[in-house]
Image (cartoon, rainbow, N blue to C red; front, side, top):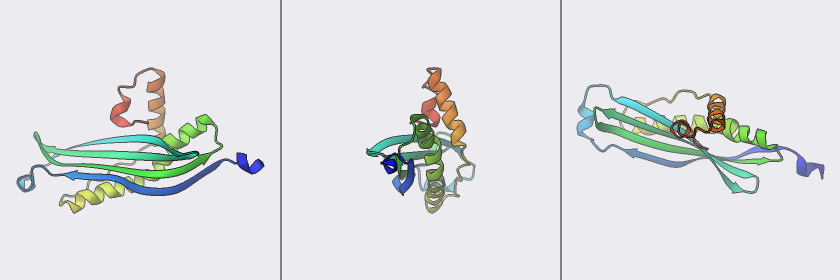
Amino acid sequence: MAEDKTPTFQIQRIYLKECSLEQPNSPAILLEKEQPAVDIQLGVESNVAADGVYEICVTATVHTKLKERTVFLVEVKQAGIFEIRNIEQEQMSQIMGIACPQIVYPYLRSNVADVIQRSGFPPVHLSEINFQAMYEQQRAQQAAGDTSAIAGTATQ
């Protein structure tokens, strides 16, 4: 019986869930010489896959523009399946909001850079993210009842 209550945290699989690239103004936009503006949005979400098994998705949206014209728009959703059992709720929330995204994020960064580079542009390297700070900010905003600011940086 003691085995049934043993805390468990295991990575089952890391995978690319979605990947899209749009270059609506190509090929003309490829001849432009000026630097585009780059907007990067990041999101985190979790879903129950089965009893004690969770899917954690980290999404990056990279939108580059020259004035009002889109150069490219890339959205990549990297996911991981994690078995998490017999862990207290507060720790569970931290594992799903901090540890799991930290595991998935390097794969996301690599895929974003690769897709952009393969599309003919210099790669965009996403910065390291402090998921603990993001998690704490989200918790503080939820405690204050302000959910509007959460949507732009992370959702769970």
